[in-house]
Image 1: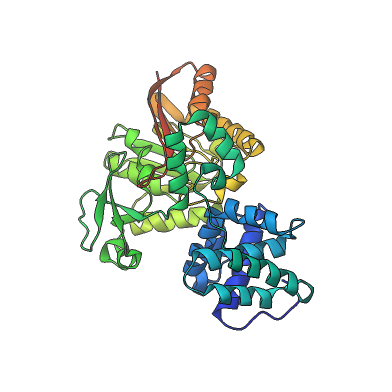
Image 2: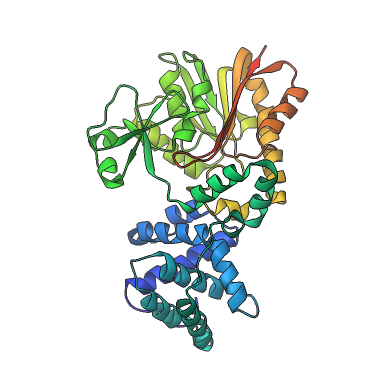
Length: 401
């Protein structure tokens, strides 16, 4: 990355890998989740996940420090190096602050070693303290929008949730009780959720191996819970990796026809794995909503969105959120909703859902759909704001009369 041999030892490998992750995410080529899943060194994934999540939770503060310390913005590689080293020094205990600075200097290019050393020594000497005000924590674009719409109390709640680590939560099938330590979590839907302070015990349990539990946030249950139950035919238009399809299958009639469609062939491989583990006989299609045929009692459109409701688990999403990205999301959602119409039987239902808390993607999108398709009526809608125990989400149930 910088023309020098990388420093030996785990610390140098972690720093170089973290820099690569920041560069990939900030360039818009990938999301943090995808980078960790596909590109992070497997043996460092857990360490890098904790480090990079902290970088993005503290990025507004850290970039404010760099703006004060630097006469001009550092180039991207140097920016990533400094962000990582300052995060390790200020917010992590796995490496001593002085050691974090030393490793960063060793990674820097020869002509930039003095600059990196000066910035980090000043950071260690002055020990700037992060503030907890929303403006000092949340990225500028979502913060400005939310200040106009939400109360000060709600905005402070978002800020605290953004800074906090999301708990490890999972859904348990209705007829199975966990045989390992865990606590029940309130759910906004019809399904049972639990939290555990020991993810390893959960992932190594017999319940997980047998497919009786699924790792996800309780907010994910809100949309499937709008189903009546007993449906004989179900289509999930944006299904991968299949978590919501599995919930709908639990509520469906025995032997129901279930189709899970998605445009991503890679993510549909995970859908197939999840279905096979849980012995769900459903058809998995790699196709766009326009390419699916047939009519169904229930269609779920859990559409791509801005992800502003899931910032506890994906803090990098708020840095991708902009006016332009919102327009792109709304346009795609409209296209998917309109494509769903021919797939819904008379008297059938369309469940529309996002993991966004933006009105343009949620209630306004639904109102626009009803204006274009007056044969539908709104039966129910719900908005769940992010909190300490769950992500944010929106769901609406539309009936074709």
